[in-house]
Length: 304
Image (cartoon, rainbow, N blue to C red; front, top):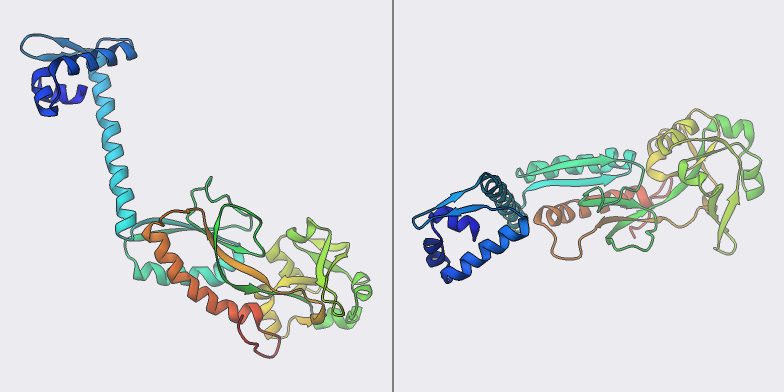
């Protein structure tokens, strides 16, 4: 009401524009001045004049209204046209191998969308970090996130041929506990590897003392250097297994593949930029995970 009165130059003109009685408008302005604790307008019979405080107040109010209007336009555009900045996170190596090529193709197809790709092995909080979409490896904890399952990723116990020749190829849990092993940061939290009993199908938490404990990618590098056995996500060992630098062992003890999901926080209507990315990236990641998630060494199995 105050801004309308200033724009029209008088309370009576503003009242006609807003279709309210002049006394009502005058009372509202007075209530605003009482609330703020200072006089904003000097009223005369012909016009209105802003006080110094009134000038500052009107300037700030106009700026706020312009920002609100711009935010509303941006928000409306997100639901009507795929545009804006999309923030996506994924584990570091997984993101470089799988997600970055998909993001490249996505950007070529949607020129009005920009992508900020956060590659981090930590689970970033989607709400606190203002993230639109995340790739999550492994079974999800209970949360309010909305998840789309896109495939599975299996683990593989492996070491170099030279290491296995020197240490002996493990064929049982007891053998494994006598051989130097490598831990990644996730395995450090549980002090061992989770494997499967081939006789019962039940899960085994195998206690191990790591010869070397480090981050995920460095664990694969350490295995290739022959420092010890590693229990790695298959995609991290894939190339080294294919060219013979690493050799898989104890496959019958390997647990069932873990799920891979695309997750987002919104439960309502998704912005088009997020919906387009989900529809674009989901099938492509699913196709890759058929190969990296369930393929057996030396042969191809049926997709999940």
